[in-house]
Length: 402
Ligand SMILES: Cc1cc2nc3c(=O)[nH]c(=O)nc-3n(C[C@H](O)[C@H](O)[C@H](O)COP(=O)(O)OP(=O)(O)OC[C@H]3O[C@@H](n4cnc5c(N)ncnc54)[C@H](O)[C@@H]3O)c2cc1C
Image (cartoon, rainbow, N blue to C red; front, side):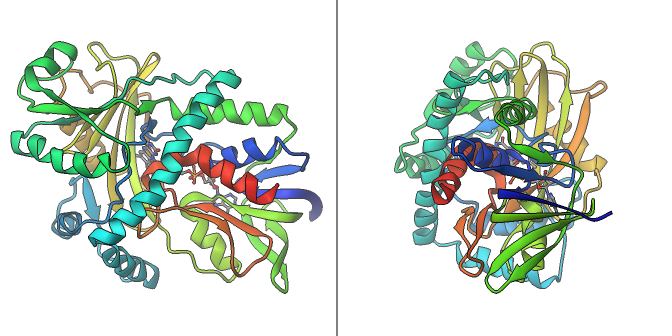
């Protein structure tokens, strides 16, 4: 049965980005509705690694990564895997990615990324001072761990670049590191630590935010997939959902993560975003877990320890909208971790998970008013860093719509 509702601001997508938009917007008097096709807060923002990393200012665009991707096409368990695709969206995205693989663009894009990462880190401090959200928030920095001595030494070049953006890592040689972290295997080379980096348990953060928003009167409409829009001239009038509800709104925010381009096309728009699939395995507390998160650099596996669990995550698979759980990739996470850590990652996991990062071709999210639809604001394309950039995105969107 068809029914109609109305609101002032309709946010499409209840992941970390939609929730942070609603959090700052709910400080105004507007009526806010969040629409989600699943339970809000259960998509990409649920099972990720939970790192809050101002250190990750550099975009993904680099020629070595392109060569790694090309070589990985035949390897089912490589940390970076690209499935050959001939869709127009993928080819356009790939061309734009290549155009951004030059030094000047990398530096410019890093500036834009920094403008989201640095304030977000400070807004997290404010958030946890103001609100009671139990989400294992810790701020001791994150190790970038190497097994190979040359790669370890060579990281000084990357550190020189990140230092330009206020992110300077400290080099920790092997012996000192082994004394600090008994969880590490003896055959590692050393680590760099960015001390501004922090971490949290993402599903707990998003559940905490949702609870606060419900308390503030934000309305959640879940299991309601947006299937179309009504438009008049350059304005959206309403969003039609699979539940038969039509929601009329003055303003629309598109925060649907990796699904954003599919929704944009229903509005006649084209967004350069593709899904970058990742995996995680979550276990209960493990004996001899590391004291802080570890990025195992050669394998690109992340281990995140919390007081109530332990997660291995990562891998990047460009394979379109394929949501299957590939056991090869899950096992590669375990194998990768066992090359660096004494911590066991065997045993029955509490959860095995896959999610899509919304990847733009220059690693810079798309935030701000649409040029073609006068009452549409974008908040999407956060790629590998949605948890780290959520608060600043929410503030920007709220400043635009206030
Ligand atoms: C393995 C892995 C590890 C990661 N680790 C980190 C990390 O350590 N730190 C970090 O900062 N980031 C990390 N990320 C990235 C981060 O998870 C994402 O950038 C972030 O979750 C994106 O948030 P979002 O709100 O844009 O999208 P999502 O959380 O995916 O939310 C989008 C929402 O839109 C809804 N939706 C989609 N289509 C429709 C529709 N038609 N109608 C209604 N609703 C719709 C979906 O149901 C979903 O709930 C990781 C990602 C992966 C995959």
